[in-house]
Amino acid sequence: MTLVATVLVVEDEAKLRQLLRDMLEREGLAVVTTGSGAEAIDVASRIAPDLVVLDLGLPDIAGEDVAREIRRRTETPILMLTAKVAEEDRIRGLELGADDYMTKPFSPREFVLRVQAVLRRTRVQVSDDGPMSFGHHEVVIDEDRHEVRVRGETVELTPTEWGLLVALGTTPGRVYSRYELINRVRGYEFEGYERTIDSHVKNLRHKIEREPGDPVIVETVLGVGYRLGLARDA
Ligand code: CA
Image 1 (cartoon, helix red, strand yellow):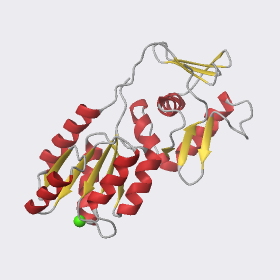
Image 2 (image 1 turned 45 degrees about the vertical axis):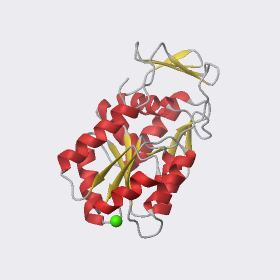
Image 3 (image 1 turned 120 degrees about the vertical axis):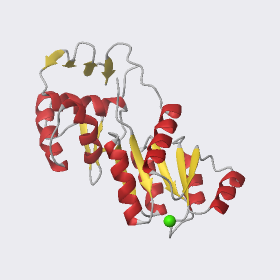
Image 4 (image 1 turned 30 degrees about the vertical axis):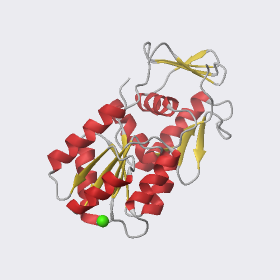
């Protein structure tokens, strides 16, 4: 099972932030950006990115404090960006747990290679031994047979609905933003804007929920996105 990774980019310079986003998206990665350290800490705990690209010099909270706070809560790898050579010493000395760092200015090519290297090194491999089962077998996703069974019955899903369910099922309970979901199902030929995710979710619920108006499998997290409401069976 190959999944697109999500990268949180924390950079207060708007131009550079956009440039980093463009470069990563060109590599097929899902990107979430912010220019604020406080928001970075909040977003990192909500979306659990696969990598954080973190500028050391932020206007509200020092980058090293942001790194420490993120690391206190998760194992998320961090690629630190520094403006000056002198800042490299701060990174070395503080043992921030940054997995790598780059001194500005850097070439786009170098940046992309570093990101890929960190992701390769730290990526948790999802085992695909047999079907994934959730909620005491209420929902079973069999990727080998490309089949979804709900309460024992095989359900026909469109490629987009299938992609959504597989994405949500990868980490039950984790909230996925609409933006992330678009990126994750892109491999299933999804085209559209964030809001169209909502109509796909609606259709999916009609196929798999007992009460589509009161969903327990694909849950809405207001203002954020969606998550799988069932726990993965042992
Ligand atoms: Ca900065």
